[in-house]
Image: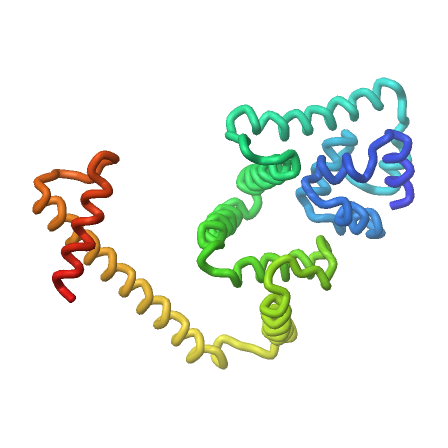
Length: 258
């Protein structure tokens, strides 16, 4: 990787610029460059680098064979700037008002990375479901604090942040990470099997099904109350003008049944 480091220096590509181009943190770029072989990079990041340098593979011979001419330097700079422009163009169709520069960059980076994942031919279907689950996790972030702990744990184990960093409830995050580490150690060491965990997983499924049934039941009750409230008030639907009145009527109907 010495040849690659030398080439990047010659091209004037900083670690910050490379991190922005690859859609990773600067620390992750340092981690990549410490690897002894480009083939050990994540595939999508490796291909992005190939595209930037206009090469077919990342062998030492290929890297060493690159002649940094004025024309080549300008072509690399053009590809790099175009990538940054594509990131910045997100603000043209995403409302970034109220967000500071760092927050806007985060929205841009996440959006571009999701688009990149969904556009991959390999594992396309799996990536779609993974991004869907990620989206659903974000939707539940306020109601399930453990999601933040999971995300923090994963950032630590993949080298993005310091393992002693705690941005949430430090005590709860510390405890959760210890439990998660123990569980994943058991999983990765082969100490668990489908047969051993069959009963536990059965309870897991039953608990979720029960919660879903309770949720459906509550939804049906609310719909019944809404219909009754509308009927008593003489309305056909809820709108901005009558919403407060309908909600007040629903509360009244509920109090009658206590």
